[in-house]
Image (cartoon, rainbow, N blue to C red; front, side):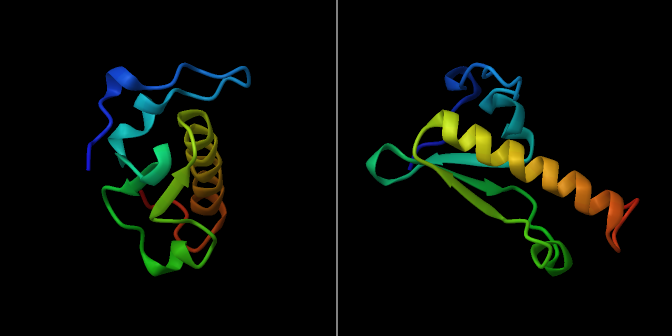
Length: 90
């Protein structure tokens, strides 16, 4: 198992999503099988947030796909935290 260093991060995409290194503060990125990448949260989410569709683990077949997944996850998390029962908690 190899942790992907920030120097190997994907470049920002055409839609302006951050590169993979942006997410290393909250996620540990490791190699998966067949060239895929696995992102695991460094601090697990409470069950209340998992029940809202958030994840502690995200996978992608490429850096670009994983960046897309983590971007979508961060957008959903921001929405849930603003509108849900945990609004105002970080």
